[in-house]
Length: 370
Ligand SMILES: Nc1nc2c(ncn2[C@@H]2O[C@H](COP(=O)(O)OP(=O)(O)OP(=O)(O)O)[C@@H](O)[C@H]2O)c(=O)[nH]1
Ligand SMILES: [Mg+2]
Image (tube, rainbow, N blue to C red; front, side, top):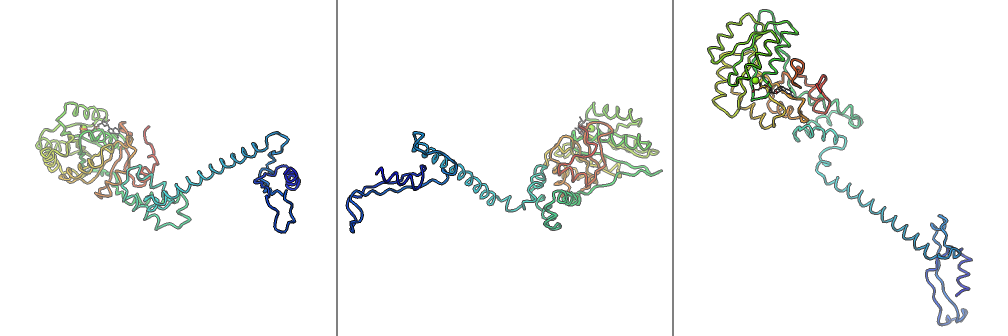
């Protein structure tokens, strides 16, 4: 046996691993091999040899080192297998994810952004489909081109109305209506400042909000600052007289009391006041901080009055400007102004489709107050 082992070592070197030994009990048939023959199966671990790991009997524990190295390699292989398994699992789950199947990979970021903005899923997919049809594969691979095309697709769905132009000798009447606390009075003050302070026009306020003591005072304060008269009307007759009194003005701005869209009596009173005043423009003021279903309900209920514009307020308080897109897409109503803060007169902008589209995709409005 010793002789055989020595032969193995001399043939394969000191790193040789003895895998199996056996003494041959009987001489082989041709009796060329003696009775004392032994058989040794040995191998050389090429990797161990390459790594220069010692298995020599000189260090005292060759077998121990070999099994440690094998164990180490085994652990390493196990880790690699686990890693491959997790990659395969991820790919498999992506392939079965309906999102991955429906939305091409180049759109995944914008799709996520649209949903984050609360654009409705169907609308988001429709927008992406339109963009996909218009762009080549290489254009789709460019996030900038994709963004720009998506902005124009969104903008197409946002009708806007130009700001009211005041012409000499043609008095215009603007009324703001809407649910309680939406920002009607503040927005009216911003508009008045715009026309009076920036354009030097003559304006008068009419307020029909006599339900709350503070409401009249609020508008009176703005009227004093702007230098415009204010009329407080308790009835339709008062409103008629106020309008006659201010025939010389360039613009009449009518503030109305906040109405619950669910209160039918209040809605009818408002409709009757509007028919007496017959404004050139009636803007429905909606706060974007309100739930979308409540905003839709407000539009439905306030439609008893011939609304022709929407004003969205409190854009500074929301991360979900996509609801505005859902609303105008459904109602096809034009947006006139956007407000983005409490500062009078700064925090108001004429609505622009492109800016709104950018906002929905996460680009802040210029001049947005912090
Ligand atoms: N953050 C923010 N607050 C606003 C904005 N517009 C109005 N507000 C605030 O919202 C609150 C209500 O505003 P008002 O203008 O009194 O609202 P209103 O619709 O006249 O309320 P009612 O007359 O009670 O129905 C006030 O504290 C305003 O300062 C805006 O764009 N952003
Ligand atoms: Mg008010």
